[in-house]
Image (tube, rainbow, N blue to C red):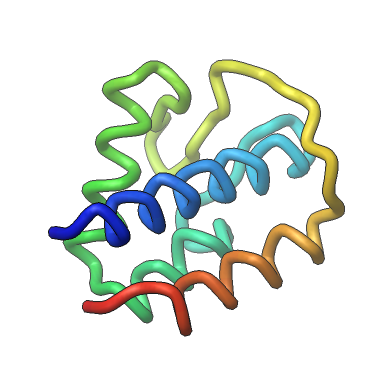
Length: 97
């Protein structure tokens, strides 16, 4: 993994947190967490789950059954649509598999 890949993955993790912050109650089911599903499709299930695992280890999120809950709250500067557009752009063009 190169430094560019690490930087892109860290940006993706931040965008995933931003999406959760914009969701009602700062929680979502895994299957409806769109940034996670985009990461699964473009990067593979293993990479997407590793990102979630690292966020959970850092105390940013917690998994409760089939839900993912944001533990550290912050105020994102973008709309949900803008966050999802950035995620799509990042995973479709910014990373190598």
